[in-house]
Structures are given as structure tokens and as C-alpha cells.
Amino acid sequence: MTEFEKNEILKKAKQWFKNTIIKKHIKNMNKLSKENEFNINPFLLTYLSNFLEGDSEPKSIAKALIYPRVLGTSINTSFGTNIQEFTSTALSSLGSAVSGIDIEFIDQIDGKKKYCQLKSGPNTINKDDIKTIIDHFQSVRNLSRTNNLNIGFDDLIVGIIYGEQSELNAHYKKINANHYNVIIGEDFWHRLTGDKDFYFDLIKAINEVAKETNYKKELDKIIIKLSQTNYIKELSKELNT
Image (tube, rainbow, N blue to C red; front, side):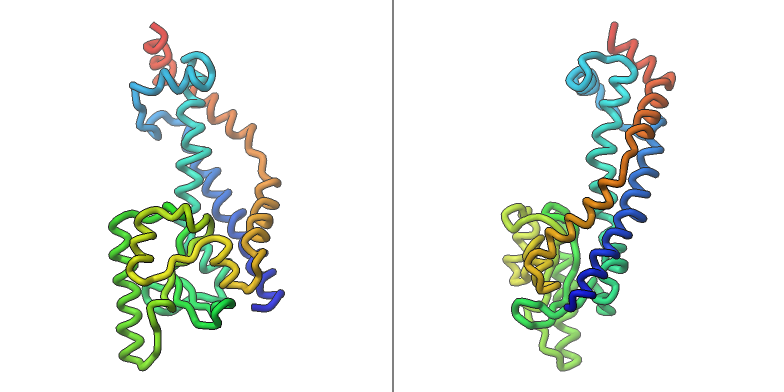
């Protein structure tokens, strides 16, 4: 991969993060001014509200409900579900026409062609996904034999955008145990680009976009809107009696 191609990936990654992740995150945030967006746990709400703000006033309750969604569930879900778009945007030149394979590339460490299914992080698959991934890989191997191609176990990999080998959950380890390599974080990007520092350059590029983002005022408005709903006001009264 040339220097130009690597820079193009960084440029496209920045655009993808700005136009997809940030926009969808804001859209999801704006939904949170309505109480029906939450599954409220009555056993924990008083505790979380007091833990966060020291009371169970409407605004404190609103914060206890909104913060976990905005800073945790919402953005992590969005990042994970949009990996396919990341593939088609930032890694468009590497896209694969093979069913069950996201990208194809020449491994810059061992020089062999890799057929890669792309995932976001080290905890992003569950037990049911193991069979799906292995079945996809087996189908590719079957197809390769039909077409007289030499695609071995080592040529079929799961590439994970971020994280470290030690963080892989048990489901990814099961895929490794089935002879298919799971390549993660720094190692994945090194093999893809030939640049050992590319993973950190990618993080830096995304952070440059992130530093331009400030939605504190918008978030404060959503918190106030939720705190002013009749449901939250009545809930606060019940919690304080």
C-alpha cells in the first residue's frame, strides 16, 4: 500500500466518523427528551440519581437516565452497527465481492492474500455469531476448491478495528481455536497497510474530528426537556416522599 493510499484511508475515515457516527449520535440524543425512550429500573433510579447529583430532583433523574445512553449505549451501538459503512467508505478500494467477506488485501507481513470479515471491537460478537462466521469461511474454502484457488485457513481472518489480543472475548477465541486467525487493533492495521504506526495515526485522525465537536449546550437542553415532562416530575415526587 502506497503512502497516498494510506492517507486516503485516513481522510475517508475522518469523513465517515463525522458524517455517520457523529450525525447518528446527535440524532439518537435528540430522541431522549421523551420518557418513553427509557426502560426505567425503579430499583436503581433513586440510587443512580443520588449517586450522580446527590438528590432525586427531576433534573438529576433526567441526567441519570440520559448520560448512560448518550455516553455509552448509543455511541457504542452506532459505531458497531456502522462498521459495514466504514468498510465501503474508508476501505472502498479493498471491498470484496465474495459473500461473507468484507475486504480482501495482501498481508504486508506475510505477503499472502487475506479474505477478511471486519468487526469493530474485542467484545462485539456473541455465541451465535461464531457459527455464522465459521460457516462463511467454510463456504469460501469450498468455493475456492471449485474454482481451483488455494485459500487456506490462514488466509481467512477476522479483522477487528480496535483493541488488543488480550481483550478478545471467549467467542473470538473460539474462532481462533477453529484455525481462523483473529487479528486485532495495531496488528490488523499493520498487516493491512504495512505501517506499524497506522493504528495510532487512525486514532489520531478520528480524535482530530472529535476535538471539533461540542454538543454540551444541546445535551443540556435535552436534559431540561426530559426533566420538565409530567412523568419525570411525578416520578421525582414519588421518590422524594
